[in-house]
Length: 501
Image 1 (cartoon, rainbow, N blue to C red):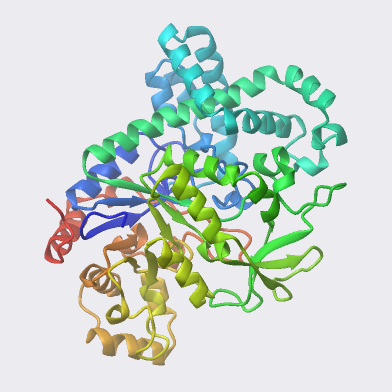
Image 2 (spheres, rainbow, N blue to C red):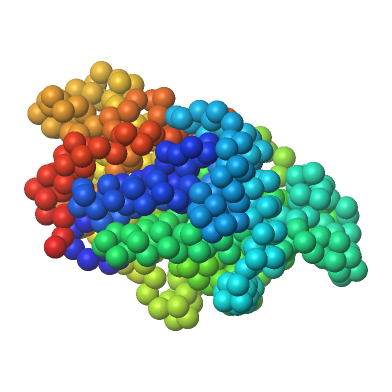
């Protein structure tokens, strides 16, 4: 079990933190948030994936399954290191305070990151150069391909790798050598940005751990087609050998979130090829994430037992079929090589007894979502009296509406079912009622999104699955982290035995 005793925590992506430069980052505001968690006696900070984002700015569609997002680097920390100046930062535009304009952020921060990389090259001490070299050597298994991929992507105007010059898209040896020489400086920039991200994140994680707070990261089951992973290791994915396009696409069948299912478009894994390599890529991926995280939530865990496979050419996920995956064999291999891993299984959606058996075989805790609890009778597995201890109780997740927005959108009969269960909505509001319900349950961990702590409505929703635009942009303001809110969380957390020592 990854938790020591009863704990609770808050779900918040770093991009949602407040600050002056258009996007939440891992600088001053992140340390303030950890102080807020500490004051509220919280033990877990759950984040979404931290990788460099691509299409739609989704952290679940990253250019790498192992790299960090340079846009999360604190430019104020770069200034404190003497790599950029106050004058550089004074050129920041008037960014919106409550949302992230990703294009504007990239336009502002990219030149600063380039300057920082160039300054590091000329002014780094011998000790700093050695640290950079040690970082690069230790992460050679993903860093080289990632930095090369991103430099190539920039050189091709941001196009997907399948639209690059044919020779480099196919990784022909002569083309690799030619482009590697041509883009040497740009490759070094991308490597430095990963080094800087890792340093800043490691300092932040240490600050959290010293205060008894664990960082729960997130591992998307699939990787984006337009990623360093797929370009550098096409043999472990189901791709057309000529075009590089996915021959089989990932998704899920129709469910609570979508009547036509969700067609994600990621390429399906070539599991036979992965097995023949001893699942090496998966081992590297877990090792890379454990560099950043104390706990790992696996998104779409059910894909390790069976996955929904859709043929290329389909426009929805409705006409797919289930294919069995070698989950037991993979997790046995990981356990033998890496030991017991601190995994949480996102076991939502179409869950069969086989998926539950895989989860329970390795003792991975699952998830219980209170938003799903009141749409059926007493057998509903999301009702608290049906919980097991080895699980995480959530009000909702990043894919749900906020609790206030959810409640406002309920049908009358489901609202009545909820009211009957809790005995009426309190004067504190439905968001605090559900937070209390999660905290009071027997679940080992209770997690609630920051939007629920603040009692925000639908306009603060982080993601609407199946909606192509308008996601991942929500941010809160610094004044939201006040003592009144942290005191309320602390009191409830202590009441329900989750405050620890």
